[in-house]
Image 1 (cartoon, rainbow, N blue to C red):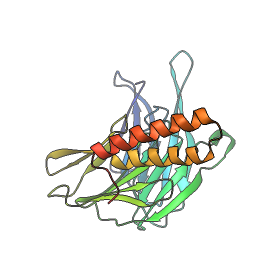
Image 2 (cartoon, helix red, strand yellow):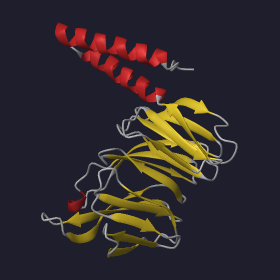
Image 3 (cartoon, one colour):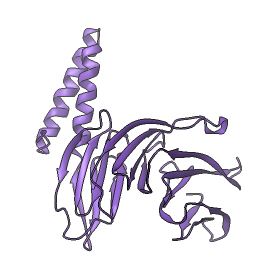
Image 4 (cartoon, helix red, strand yellow):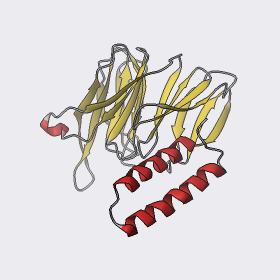
Length: 245
């Protein structure tokens, strides 16, 4: 990594060099920083707070590796109340947000923000929100997981439908939620414990996409290849006990 980000409970975000030098200070202007993170691709930092938006900045470096600046990239606007949490896909082309307004939203952030192009809203879905509330987007952007209190609900991002509900995962409120880098597992933290779950919803999403591709396939070779892949994926899903409830 080229930098480290820290965020305080006010509106201050600091960008540090790995040697501990402050490279830049950002004022989020969100009244407070409820949540902040660095994107998996390492290009962006983002925060949310009291205001109903998520602000994203690009941390820019020169070709020789020297720090240049922190520049505004884009904002996710549309919620009607403060945003609890947000998450990036692995390539930062998609993001998901969850808000006090009782909805989660799925965004296309693959935009030319340097030309002032704004992200596109793909989905708005009603959900239960109990503080603390966290959202995690799988690396491939196929699945959204939302923790609310001690429960976790998983949704597909193709239609926004609930795929799985895990109740009473922890004895106390869940404090953090994340997919691993492969997208195979979902981890939750709470009551001084970390629990790991298979991402069965992600496997189902892959099967669904391959079935859609099979319906459109015209060549025999393509159809046979997809049929084999679907069969293998279904077997893997069955081994996880991941049939739809």
